[in-house]
Length: 148
Length: 148
DNA sequence: TGATAAATGCAACTCACTTGCAACTTGGAA
DNA sequence: TTCCAAGTTGCAAGTGAGTTGCATTTATCA
Image (cartoon, rainbow over all chains, first blue to last red; front, top):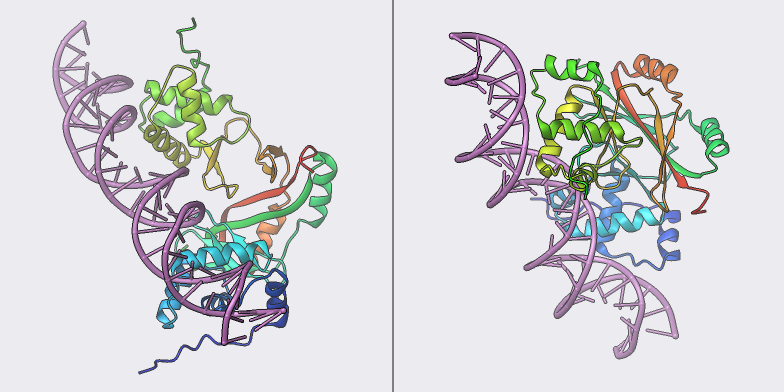
């Protein structure tokens, strides 16, 4: 029976630096949460992070996951992804280009879309509205090949 | 003291037709909810609809507002607008062009953006992913002139 | 090694939204 | 005009995501 926790992965130095710069400690629960986020190729929910930690025998309280995700968001290490599902998803930022997502209305499957057509438009909107734009959310919804 | 309810407005025939076609009844609470939605120039929340009805001396239970908004969404008479505030907003569709929104991170102010750059991109994504795209959500976040 | 600031886990809470059900409207048929 | 079935409403109670308070624990650094 496998009793060791295999979440000890190599964390990029830049991430550790960001944490140190923010006066954050590298606790065991925090390392495990960071590992799950880094391993996940698509945005995941807080509950999913907690579930995976439980399965990996590194159970962490849901509250701790919420607090860590909020902290990582403040440090801009994770992006929130809102797909109008009733809960938020989060994805690691490190080493990934700015992108968007499409989700199937049938099975819920999420696919990365490695594109963003909004740079020019952002400037135009700033000119017209006098807002200073900080970010945007763009998601597509539809039906995947299997669910059509 | 004003005792009459001034929510009796002229409802577009097309809306009434959609309701009839769906086997829906035109109850007093429903008419009042439709009136609030039609009068609102920006997306509003369920709680805001209920508040406005209370002020107009036409109080309707929150549950009834939720149920009506869900029904209007199914009939495609209102659009959901998710600004990641912890609650959804809704806007009447009738007589308004497809558009998007920008919200100030300071004061929460919402402004309509009468544009959409996503038609061509949607076709491209359908080609590449083999999804059939049904809709998209695009919101901008930033700081309005007063909050900068 | 010891001090201290940060982090954790638990319990209890808030708030958006949903569900079950009995009582009440609406709108069409008799 | 009256009656009735389908649809609708309001209330109470429930669900589920996310938050808060607080006592205990842990990482970090002098």
